[in-house]
Image (cartoon, rainbow, N blue to C red; front, side, top):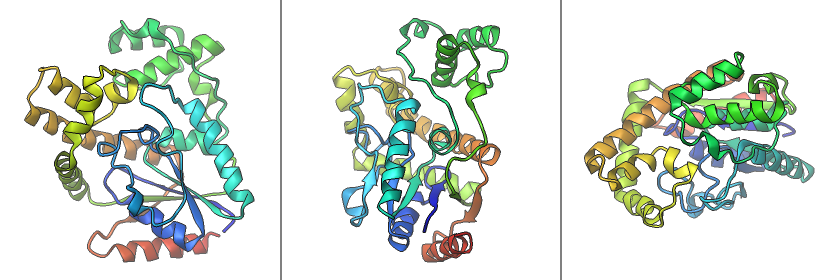
Length: 294
């Protein structure tokens, strides 16, 4: 295998299980492409792979950062490319796994990123004010008005580079890559998301989040991350626990919708419908496709 393999798709669709099987088949090493799994201690809420689930497969860019240390897409691009080249030099297969499409594109495509500086002057603005400010100085920016993190990134990028963040985007791939996407019926997916949130709660999600809340840590992963921001609202007394759990489910379902939209517009992905009753069928189907394109 002389190509990079990407395994992506919405949350709760089986990416982790497939990645282990593919890594075994093609002598691969797994590189995290989930923007929340870089952070130490964010385990249950991010559905981070457990040590016993790795089955001896090397995993990279998991648990590399404290939650109060910045780790931006700029850092990820640099680190991921170093790891990709190292894995290839050892004649193994890099396998990028995760559902954060923008990070996948930053690692694999000809994106020119500059190091983002901390820009606290935007903290007092509402999302609506940020969007108005952005469209005033950068009419080419295409950013979700409700995505606060990306609004601030686009504003900061324009101020630092005097050009739109949209101008650094390209469809030019830097690596020979096979894109695998996992999908399933939307109703089934949403049921799996709801069930997974219930399992997370049983596994100790509330205690995991409270540990950071009690330390008064209000960094981006915690105030923006699904599963964390909702429980912060609960700890603040703004909503009940049941409301927080329902909100986690709702936000996770909405995130899955956004993931589909991004993947379908930004990447040339081969989609596979997952057989949850016999996952080996899905694995065999994916392997057959990879073999035919290698």
